[in-house]
Amino acid sequence: MSGDPHTFGLDPVPDAVEARMTAAIVRDGEIPDRVAVEEPLEIRVDGEPLAVTMRTPGHDEELALGFLFGEGLIETAHSAGATADFATNTVEVEGPLSREPGRRNFYATSSCGVCGKGALEEVAVEAPAAAPGPEVERDLLASLPGRLEQPAFDCTGGLHATGLFDGDGELVLAREDVGRHNAMDKVIGRALIDGRLPLERGILCVSGRLSFELVQKAAVAGAPILVGVGAPSSLAIELASDRRMTLGGFAGPKGINVYCDFGRISG
Image (cartoon, rainbow, N blue to C red; front, side):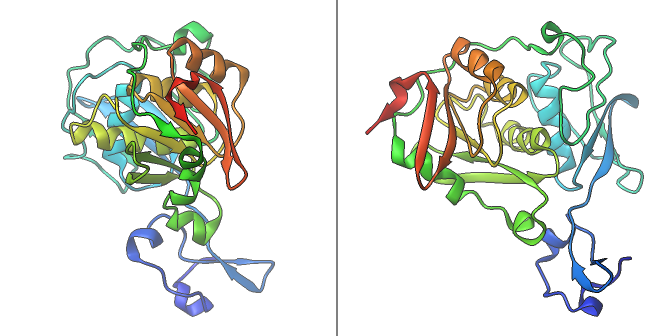
């Protein structure tokens, strides 16, 4: 059941946040609640379908460009969204692509951007080793999740977030999405549009666990440091170490665990 949030007695929220959730549903038959929106997005290039991902609507052009950049299909910002049909959940990107995307299926669920892509070698995108980047105090890295703006999560508890920080720990931009990989793509897509790539002096922070796919996307974007609230996987650590990235998990008030490339950490 859905409808105007005011008719269910829910406190109003900013329009930009309201767009990322249903207006209201009734939980347990009586209590009004908000939930995050999850809908498919088809990414097309020059009219041809390329990929489908389950995402939270909003910043779809950034998502499309960030996804294509992370897959090594574009190297610069392309025109996107000019002919987007948001009623049918599609976004158009102007080609050409930097390389042929191949035959693998780019369908992705909101929980796993790598699922269905086949063998590991098919998802590994070539990325240079990370630049030296900033030197950051351990306590500053641990504090980044607390500085990550998550207004839609605060209302629903159902979204992931990625934030781009500078070397002083100042938030540059943040994006939320029901898919952790989508939140990362949106940040990278925005950085691509703004001419910030590669992120040689930046720090990426995610609100959940550190998977291989997130390290892969951060590596392609040139980020020397990636921090997460949760734990990394073994493959995430392996990839970060290979790309000479600093990878930190379990970041929070109690500190942070650093898994590889400690040279950027002070204090």
